Amino acid sequence: MEEVLKYNKIKSFLSDKRIRNEDLAKFLGKTVNSITKWNSNRAQPPIQELYRIAEFLKLKDWRDLLEKEPYFIKIGRDKEDKK
Image: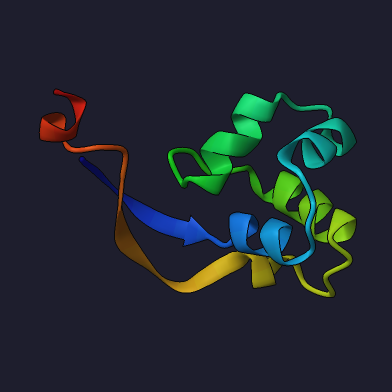
């Protein structure tokens, strides 16, 4: 299992607003794979993309998309789970 720092809350906002990754990807002109990486915190969007995501989600401040204090989360599966 891999540990990554959780910096953003994009996945939570999409889930709460019942918006699909595909819809956000289309709005941004990005691939669904990019959105998935951002949702899992495997990669982080540039600040200008955070601004556009906030616009799409109708948030007043793009900084609402960020965790106040990043923390580690585990993602993926344990090697034992793959057996």
